[in-house]
Length: 329
Ligand code: TYM
View 1 (cartoon, rainbow, N blue to C red):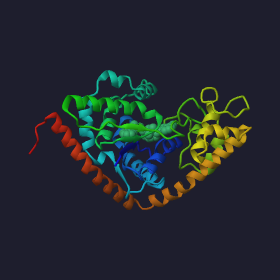
View 2: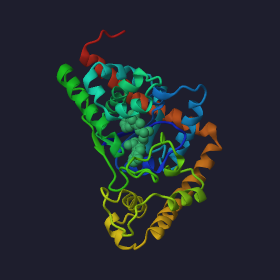
View 3: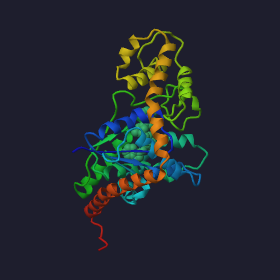
View 4: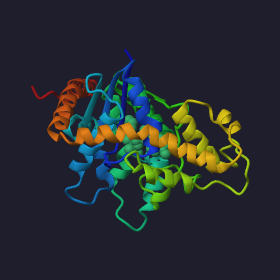
């Protein structure tokens, strides 16, 4: 059976990019694959400087994952820091990665540029090695992610190939999988930048837990262009194309076909807003129900951690054995 792993940082919120780029695929994949989904709280430490907030964010994020449709019986949903094996294999992967290739990671370059003049943690730099460990730990064949993670999956493959050639066949080489529509959702106010939680202004960012009235308003105010023609062309019409792609992700109709149905921007904006609201409404309801029983959420995460650990400890032991480290005995 195909093995799948993916991860999301526990911010306590998810936006439409996370949903269309990753989570929706996660839900689909649980029907045909052995799926592992990780709340990567250790990754969140790379830019965290506030005490006491991460546990709550992690629990809320778990509630969102279950609310969008992950089924704890079919998917293994767990918290990264509950398994020390992630740090342990992360170190092994740091020792496979070179400083040169880590310096070429666009996410590191972007994030460190945005923090210029501030503290830039070494963790931000070595982050892809920990991510590689997350993936390789579960012998994942497929990694369902948005397009922005492509480079991280490539370096994971490179590190696995390097390890396997140094120490013998140990790791499975994973492949990134992206959805047909919504692999790169753009900011509604700046459609040349991807929708991101670290954006400066909230107006271009649509969170799945946003109030429906707020969602409709954000779509109504979405930036388009000074023409009037509805056409799908990411290069010259990024705003309109982003709306078409979001509507496509909601309806399953291709963006080009949708373009033919509209002659004005106004109806495209309001229909897209309404389609998103219809999609998130049941998720919001389930989210609030789930969050009302924190003991149950915690229990679900413990079950996930136990199942994940059975796989993780075996892989770590295999990697140590391949290297030839002295067993504790
Ligand atoms: P994170 O938490 O930033 O994002 C979670 C998932 O959402 C996708 N995504 C998007 N997809 C489409 N359009 C967007 N605008 C958009 N923004 C985000 C991301 O591609 C991702 O799939 N490094 C990872 C977390 C991670 C991970 C892993 C992922 C850690 N270990 C192992 C896969 C496998 C990250 O920060 O994702």
